[in-house]
Image (cartoon, rainbow, N blue to C red; front, side, top):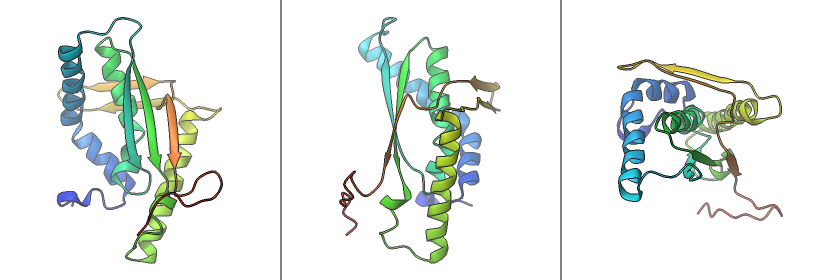
Length: 172
């Protein structure tokens, strides 16, 4: 279905499916990064916090299909390792991509639909009426996450204009 760098082809559910399918690799990679940090810097003390940055597009399939699960996975692994993390999200909105060459009106519709769905999901998990997050990843051992927390401790939504309406991204 997916070839090389094509990602999930703007299909959010396929992006999330790929996360579940590759969960062991992803968990191991995150665990290895934490282990490497502890080897290089020593085990953090109780007041130390590791800041994790997630940069993702909300417009395609891979990014918008995984941007909610990944911070929860990171937080759960950190908790199990006895580490405190702060997860920062830098999420690109559809306007950052729309002016670039788009192959078809259908591709434009997918970009906008994915962005809308991703923002609605983010609002449900970070808004005033937060819903709890729950997921079970079936791998060698079942890995279940249940959380009342927001996925991101701080989240920045990035589009192509500043607060005064000036274009900040060069689409040429």
